[in-house]
Length: 119
Image (tube, rainbow, N blue to C red; front, side):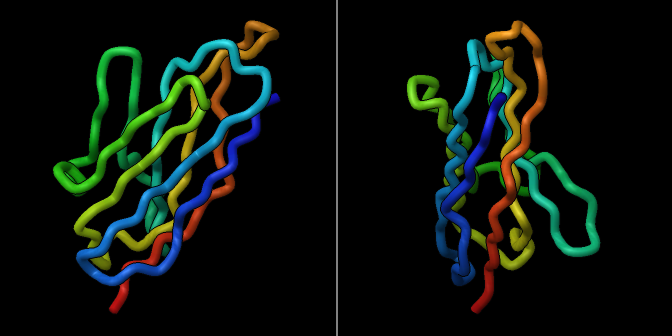
């Protein structure tokens, strides 16, 4: 019912920037919340940033460096990542919490995009 396509990952040097995009398609009638997660090798998936109906939140490790935004008209979520460091290396996933035309609420995940920060 809902498909998410992520893009924008890649290899970047320390101190560099990347912007991730997550485009949603399908029978979305209302977005409750969106989030970006990441999972580094050997570690659990962690929440990096989220947008709810009332606030935008960031993990302490990315505050001041990452900016999460959403274009509701395009059903697209963005994660602007600046001042990247090797600890940011991970697979990044977007997740949306939405109501669909069937009036069911559910979580949907993107396929993940690799971000590698290395010199």
